[in-house]
Length: 65
Image (cartoon, rainbow, N blue to C red; front, top):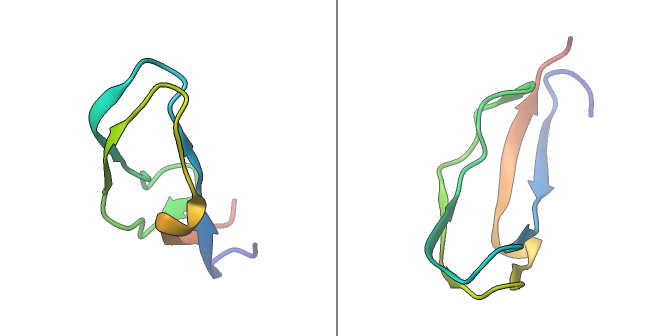
């Protein structure tokens, strides 16, 4: 990625703990990420469950250092 370039990033979500309900993931505007999208709701996730990245793609803008 180049500074200022807009990219789409795919994240896989894995529950490494106990079963959980109302799971919500948020990409924060930190570490060079700007214009992160809104939170993504996943609902219930069993222990060890995962969600494929295609369901939670986000556009981010990386700032230069």
